[in-house]
Image (tube, rainbow, N blue to C red; front, side, top):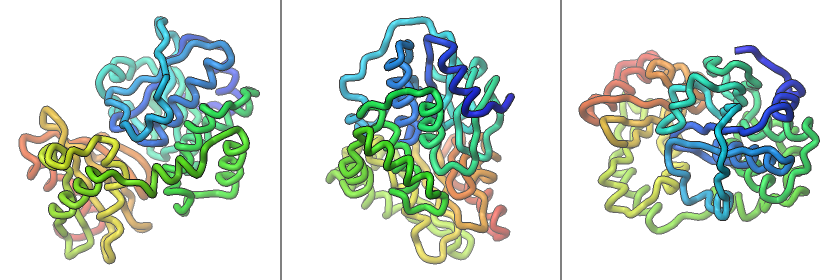
Amino acid sequence: MKMVTLEEAAALLKQHDNYLILMHKSPDGDAVGCAYGLCLALRSIGKKANPLCGDEIPELYNYITDGFEMQEFEPEYIVSVDLATADLLSGKAKDYAERIDLCIDHHGSNTGFAVQGVVDGKAPSCAEIVKKILDVMGVKINSDVADAIFTGVCTDTGCFKYSSVRPETHRIAADLMECGARSAMICRLMFDSKSRAKLDMERRVLETLEYACGGKIAFVCISKEIMEKSGASQGDTEGVASIPRQIEGVRVGITMKEKDDGEYRFSVRADDDTDASEICRKFGGGGHRAAAGCSIYADSPEKAKNAMIAACAESIGGDA
């Protein structure tokens, strides 16, 4: 993958048309915010553009997606956002894994799968990079675009509390607020609001809590049964991955999500001395040093769980 500057990326996005913007499976706020924000911005300058994710967009982001209509065209230029590896594409998005023209990403573990890319491993969110590209393009950011990009910034920074947050992160957030981003509503919805179904789901998830490696590893599972009994939606699982890592003495927190066809999706959260992305790369995933994800295919949840715990134990130099 040839690395390009913000200016070169801006030129490419001005030059082409009929954009398809890909998101990773189990899309989070950064992926959704970047894809829809970039899409709406491109449309505002007369381009045709659609976002695409192999998984359903969680209802949590309805304030971004409500009223959004897909356009009819044959994709000519493929862009990925917040995607560290093409292995994290799912569904119809996988059909374009070998056709990605431009990758916009903030994962240091990016595998270089696109023709060209803008990758800043120090950026706390991909949304920061998208905002900078739009500024270089001279795009006038309206309130809908601002809402989407602000969502990416605030969710991937933990509401601006993670150590990756830089002074320019706050400046970018302030710019988006001046463009009309509903910052208070978005932060409240992302971090301070839970449905009864979500609370019930979290209660059931905590009942699955297990420790390994002398308490240095904590594991929880979001099974299909838990989702069905609680009535929770996929959007309700947002934030659950941080729970096991919050436990005192835990160095690595593991959250396993049961999907279909023997797929188990893992979210790994690690302390400063452990590289979560290195652990997840062993299974074809990726991410950041502190937070990463991957999928393991197995004929039982126990096998998938044991494989991940063993990899985490090896990483921290202990016995599972």
